[in-house]
Length: 319
Image (cartoon, rainbow, N blue to C red; front, side, top):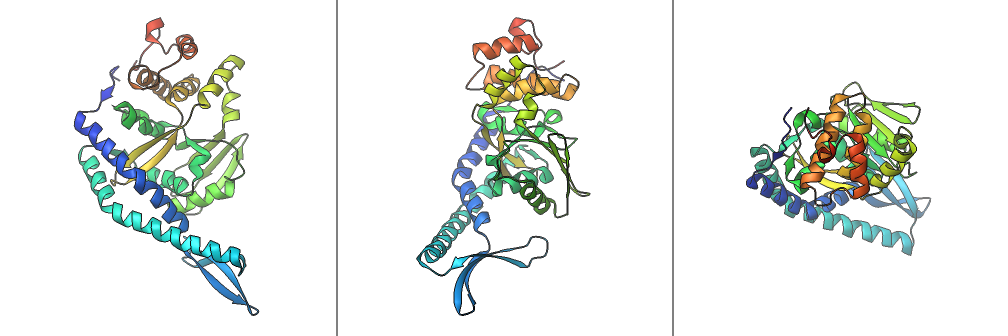
């Protein structure tokens, strides 16, 4: 493996910026549209009208109804707001779709569409339900999130998730196991099984990618007290919202840890896994050389102790 970062050519950096700019309006509108798909209608029951929200079941195609209450000023306001919001989202998506599709095709022509389609579909399924508020992608695919801001292309051998996707979740009640399984099943089009192993949740299907979810508390328990404090502070940094392009030229938004947290945690996992060790060295070098916010002195000192700081005798990205 080379010890040099693969810097984007100006045309590649410009293309990623253009698709990211187009996503700023298209992405939120698309998420709103997906959230608002289906409809609302008034249903008569025993002479009274009730507002019902319905969506199509992705497995059967049949409508699933949820009652929102008897007709009143409040439910009439809910109905009007739903219709107006859905129409606004649909119109924005319609007006922007051609531009985002063209940007995706150009990105693919430049070799920037590298995320496997099945991986992108799973990440998109969580994103469309706003579950990215509670789930942070942490694995090889997370490296795609740093490309546009750093101008560095992630090595595919490090961005490849051969053993499945790894997520860190915050344990919020808004993101339950049932919600995760439902989103996963929608993405892969098949039933999935979920199992807990200690503090880890494993989800898989016969046709889909294996997923693993672990809590940040569990992650921090794997390092010593000093390391846990430093790593906890790093994970308190705002998550990075990055845009990747799948091999089918469709963009997908990724929520990844700050690369400074990624480098430290990847080192922990790299104690007995050479791929994770290489990811740690890559992320540390990316931050040091090309990330707008570098390591602070305390982080730099810790990196030297971890062997990730070449200025203090450690190894850089590469063997």
